[in-house]
Length: 209
Length: 209
Image (cartoon, each protein chain N blue to C red):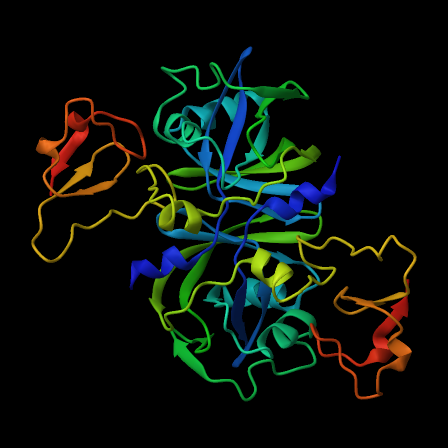
């Protein structure tokens, strides 16, 4: 088995949002797809706060990110937890059917959960599409674009997580323990204000590999 | 609801293959995604012969098409039925774990069906990944590339099917009833040997819109 073939599957990059009581929360997902003309499936890790909240709220929204999305969106929604952080704080949102969607997106789709399938680590939520609209005329971001152009990575809870390997030519490298980003070179020479370019965490989160 | 937002979801283009007894069969799918580190979900319409065959065979393969895939693959796997046609006839295949995968692909993933979820029109098969490898170093084709660059369309059984609309400036146009392709202009002026560029069906399959 060559697990690199999994990188050839194509995905978009989405913020899946829902409500925790009267507060919005959400996370990044790549694993979302239309399964019939009026249903969407999305896969969310059991460890993600959003999973528990979708089960309680029974509805979710997809905000479909574009290639020009603000650089702060993915670090917050992809690498922080809604248990500790109000991820929507300071963001421009549009409220649709009681859910917050990101104005900084190509658009949104609102779904009611009508079925779910459990796996060992993830829940696949099946949502019936209730509403949706285009917000920005922007090219939707694919995961390939995020990985290759933005040099982005996935957290360990993502289906698409593959552990990044260090350069095989013996050069010094460090891995961010939060987002898996590989820093090539000696990170100790960076100033103390250095932040991981993907998840915006400090250099203390890096380990030598 | 603006259904055009559904076009902003990103997908790859895959041949999902399985066995009908001792004969290989398969169809095109866009709706496939990794849902955990070792499972893949794929959505197949109840009307597709491949759906019935996966239920009996209990395994499937994904051949991940690249941007330079031969122009004959999508017309055969996307717009013909395995009930009537041996779709693999004349194609270069690789046999892996009893399944035929296309050599003309960026690679393959082999799955055993471990769960399934029914919707009104489609089955979502959950497959446990058993094997996979890269075959060709080629950029994986996205549905956006297929639609925008190759001018490709979806059959009515696809989750991603959206009826193409005729030009709104009053020009004459025809729609292919097999694949939904829009011919702009007077198709009657084409020679009798004209074939739809997407599904390779004759011009008798077009209707004026």
